[in-house]
Length: 324
Image (cartoon, rainbow, N blue to C red; front, side, top):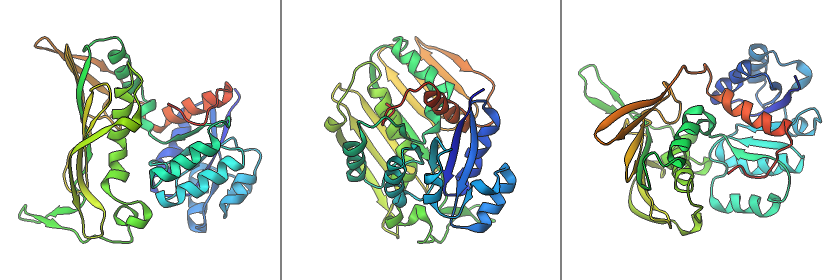
């Protein structure tokens, strides 16, 4: 079977989980890695059987290699724009860790310059490729809960407080050099976690009717800024032009979980674990009845669905600059 060759730029902690996904797909191969940290290269190379000639100590050398079909950019957010542009200029398909850029200005520049190019360029929202979300979209399209009215979606974990031996919460000391708390590096709960419910909200809002994302009304904002000048607890409502409203929340100081609820005129759909599907399950509540309508065995690595789907698009020549 023909395989798509992948290269990875940046070897942060998330990359190990992503790379393990190649063990569960037949149409893709992790061929190359690039890092400026030799220790990380050697450790990663041994764990994932990357040959030495495909281990690069600079990112440019990986992009110059003609054997690589697509690159996964796993660098800190503030470096994304530079390496997206360089990757597309090198005629590589691109999967970039979320969020794609540190601000809307950068993403608009990419869209304007590369929109007509026939390359895949998309963000690494792995949950969108999982059968759980595909089933969710099918249920909404089929009218199972009727016309959509409202949804709420959250992503939050308390990483700023720890419990003492007496059970009381004690605030942890924030490291301003940690990327998630560093404003210049794209830190904050909104960029790090909030991008997940924001992305799902825009997809759900446009399932049955295309909407203009330039006409979204934002209200009921509640944002708590931490000591390093990034948000640590944030909530907002979106109202789309078709009247659909989404309430989203992202937090570093509250255990909000991964739950999503979508309300229609005939019922509602509930997902307890939206982002990692562990376990995958969709609950339908309708006419005073509750039914589990999606519940199946979990593939060991959620990233494998993303790798498999994008590799299939490349193999079938279905390339476009944005996947939407």
